[in-house]
Length: 161
Picture 1 (cartoon, rainbow, N blue to C red):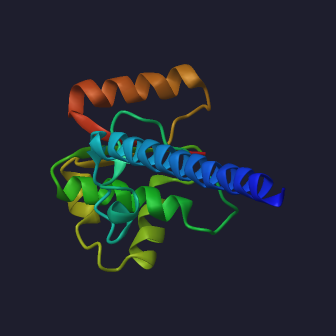
Picture 2: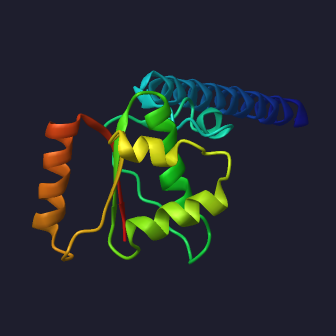
């Protein structure tokens, strides 16, 4: 009497294992597919050592990236280095600051990154521009970006608020 019941329980157990295995296989294949899609995206190399590897080759091209963090955590430094490394690769950049002056940013970066020795040279050659708009108005900021993109072939832009 017990034999048919035990056999039935065994078959249900085997069937459950088979279903779990199939589901795991589907999830794994889906994740691989998503990863391949992410890896196939065009990316902009940041030029920052180690970061591009963590980001699967860089920041997705033609995407907006927002950095969040408290004061002093390195947002401005990251953005400045991103533009600096772009200038090294021949990509002009514009840094729009809504709080600090251009001189303050250059001085802070000189102290933070003493190895970025070409900062002044890149600024003189307009490979790296730092602009502080007179007013915090979206129309003015959009106008500055449009002007720099068309007149100076800007490929990288940062708006630091």
